[in-house]
Structures are given as C-alpha cells and as structure tokens.
Image (tube, rainbow, N blue to C red):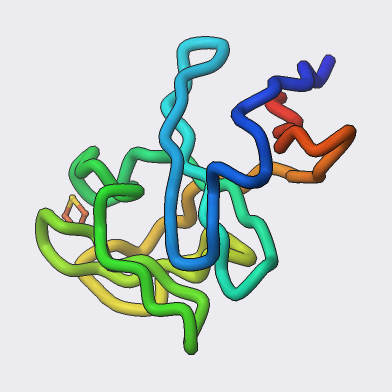
Length: 105
Ligand code: FES
C-alpha cells in the first residue's frame, strides 16, 4: 500500500532545485523542472551512485549520474545513456495545501 510522504513546503523547492529525503528505507530525490515536480529513486541502477546529486538538465528533463555519467529521464526513470541500462523507480508527486507530497510504494 502506498504511503504519502510530506517532503517540504512548495516554496522551498524552486525551479532548478532538488530535495532528497528518505522514506520507507528508500532515498528519493524530488526535482522542480520549470515548475513541474518529479520524484526519482536516489540510487543509480548501474552501481548505486547518488543519482539525485547529479546534474539536472531542465531542457531535456534528465539527471546525470555523478558517478559514471549515465543520464536518466526524470519522467520515466529510464536510462538514456550507458553505462546504466535498467530503469530506476519514479514516484507520483503532488502539491497539497502548499506541501509537496510523494506517493511512496
Ligand atoms: S553508478 Fe550511475 S552511472 Fe555508474
């Protein structure tokens, strides 16, 4: 069953920023990409790199793993470049009462 986790007030996550949090034993990064929020597992599928600490490319809606450079689509969790070839988990995000909430399952 999904758990709804309150991450932070929406005003604390402006466009271009990320907030990393832990829930249910998972590290998750929430990105604000030009006003749209995406939540993605903070663990690269290649070699467990800290994915959400990587560089955000807002134009392409991707994040680049800081360890070996694989790029992932924030919308789907799918890798777009090697060396990663397995997707990472993504999670539904919404704003409720000015709080960013992530559905963790
Ligand atoms: S750990 Fe992310 S590309 Fe290797």
